[in-house]
Image 1: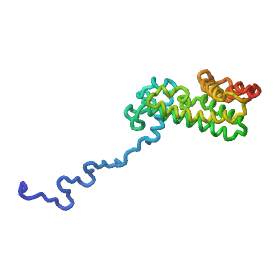
Image 2 (image 1 turned 90 degrees about the vertical axis):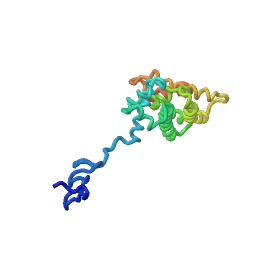
Image 3 (image 1 turned 120 degrees about the horizontal axis):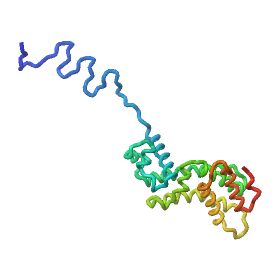
Image 4 (image 1 turned 90 degrees about the horizontal axis):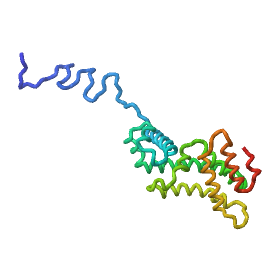
Length: 232
């Protein structure tokens, strides 16, 4: 007989109430048997940021700041273009991060090399060798520091210049400590030396003189010490 429409439906013992899933059946929003509630972990944000910086350094070094688009960088990093902005606010900010890392890597090697040298000339030579080796070892970050000029990015020009100058101040102090003839133009010496070292990345090819030998030869010529250029 049909049930009394005025009488509420009452579940018998062991039977689910209306709207309640049967035993063994998943409820709304619950995983099916064999499914896990836990989400599969994706790449860690810190790792993705490093991937982004590496890709940007590679493209900035090879194509230049203006030619490398954010879409190109996203593709090289294996990211969607919109995802880049989770890590950086703009292309200018991305350049600043890459440039700062490049300066840090060069400065770190220079500082370590200088610390083990005993005399002013030896310290300057160690700095030149470390600087030259970092530029010529194929690292993208160091190449960005040399190939991208601060004025290429007007929004970050002052900050990029400050980073560059802070590194070059190391060489200013090293040259100031040299025993040079009275009236010697120490600024010209420093600028010629750094200019020669930085320009070497345009013509250097692996298989010839080592970066260390090239750096020592530059310093020997400027210091009128031809005997120093024979070291490997």
